[in-house]
Amino acid sequence: MTGSRNQPAEPSPLEDVRAPMPAVPPAWEPFGGDAAIRVRDVRVICTAPDQIRLVVVKVETTEPGLYGLGCATFTQRPLAVVAAVEHYLRPFLIGRDVHDIEDIWQASFVSSYWRSGPVLNNALSGIDMALWDIKGKIAGLPVYQLLGGKCRHSAALYAHASGSDIDAVEESARRLMDQGFRHIRCQIAVPGFSTYGAQIVPGKNSGQRAALHLDPTEARWHPAAYCRLVPHLFDAMRTRLGDEVELLHDIHERIAPIQAIQLAKDLEPYDLFFLEDPLAPEDIGYFPQLRQQTSVPIAMGELFVNPAEYVPLIQNRLIDFIRVHLSDIGGLSPARKLAALCEFFGVRTAWHGPGDVSPVGHAANLALDLACPNFGIQESHQFGEATRAVFPGCPEIRDGSLWSNDQPGLGIDLDEELAATYPFPDHVFNGAWPEIRQPDGTVVKP
Ligand code: GCO
Ligand code: MG
Image (cartoon, rainbow, N blue to C red; front, side, top):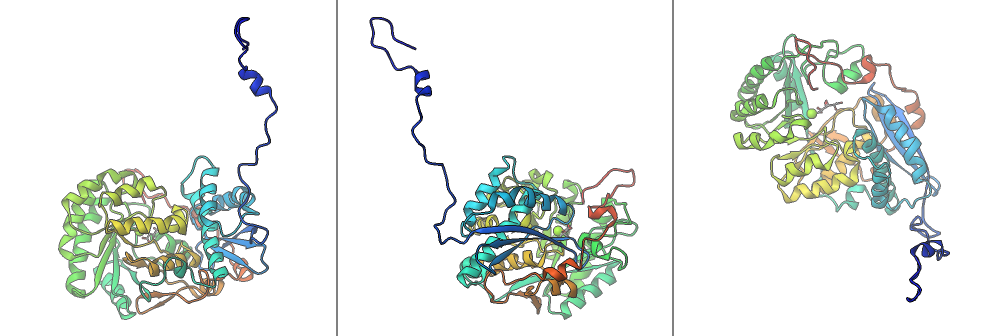
C-alpha cells in the first residue's frame, strides 16, 4: 500500500515479499564432520528359526565391517514393519551420523506426523537398538556400560509354569525350580476353554503356539470359570511349594475390570510377586479403583505403545512394575528414559521378554536390567537350538538368571546365511492373534 499524497510512502508489505530474499542457510545439515561414520544402508532380516516370526534391522555404516542390530519384532504384523523400515526409514536415515541416536529417534518419530503405534514404533526400535549396538562397538564397550554400568552381575528371571490341572502346574513349577528359577509364573487351563498361558500341545504350528501361549484351535472362552479356578490354583501352589518361591500370574486382559478387581482381592492371601496385565489398555481408567481395593503388586503394560498410556500410571503410583515391550515403545532410547522416570516413583522394571522378542531384543532388555537400579525381574524365554545358532552371543540362562557376555555393543550377532534357511512359516491365522469368543459369539480381548 502506498501512503497518501501528503504522507511519506510506507514500504508496502507486498513489495517486501517481492524483494529478493537474502540467502538463507539451510535449516539443517546432517551433523558430524568429514570424519563422521554414517549410515550406509539399512536392511531388514526376517527369520523364524523356532517357528516364531522375528524381524531384525541391520544398520550398516560407512566404516567397513561396522554394523548394528536392532529388534523390530511384531510377530502378528511383521511385514508391515518391514515396509515401514524399507520404504520410509531407510531413505530418511542414509547419510546420517551414526552417533546421533537421540536426534535420529526424534526426527524419525515426527517424520510420519501421525506417530506411535506398534508398526512405526517397532520400525523405530530396529534402528534405535542398532545405533546403540554401533555406539558400543565404536566405544569398545557393552551397551550396559554406556547406560551407566552394572548394578548387578545378572538379571533374576521368572519362568512359565503351566498345566492342564493343578497337579500338572505343580510338576511344571517344580521342574523350573530344579533348574534354579525362584520366580515362577503359574497359568492353568480352564477345561473346554482357550486359556492364555495354558499347556501347549506340541505339534503342528507349535512355534506359533509357543508365541501365543494358547491353543489356537480351541476358540471359546468364558471369564467366570477362570476367575473361580485361579484362586484355587494359587492356594494349592502356595501350600505345596512353600513360602520361599515367588509366584506370578498373567491375567492377559482377559476379564472385565470389576472381575479383575475381585480376582486381585481373592489372590491377596497367596503373596504374589506380581499380578500382570489385570486390565486392558483401553481400561486403564480403572487403575485407581484397583489400587484402592488391593495391595497385590501390579505389573502392567506389554501392550502399551504411547507415553500417554504409561506415564499417568507411574506418576500416580498406580502400578509396581512397568512391563512394556521395548520394541513396541520405540526401542532402547525411550525405555531408558521410562526406567529413569520409574525410579523416581518407586516402580520397578519387568520388561516383556517372550519368544516373540528376538534375541537382539532380549540383549537390549538385559542391558537395561543390568544398568538400572530399579530393576525388578526379567521374563525369560528359553530359545531353541536353532535360534541360538542364528544369533551367536544370545544371552545365557544360568541358575534362574540371565547373563550377558562382555562383548562391545549388544554382544549379539546374526548369521544371515543360516537365518535365510528359516523363512517365515505359513501359520494358521497368518500368525495373527486368533479370534477367541464367548459362547454367545462375542469376541474377547487376548
Ligand atoms: C507374556 C505375554 C506374551 C504375549 C505374546 C503376544 O507375558 O509373556 O503375555 O505371552 O502373549 O508376546 O505375542
Ligand atoms: Mg503378559
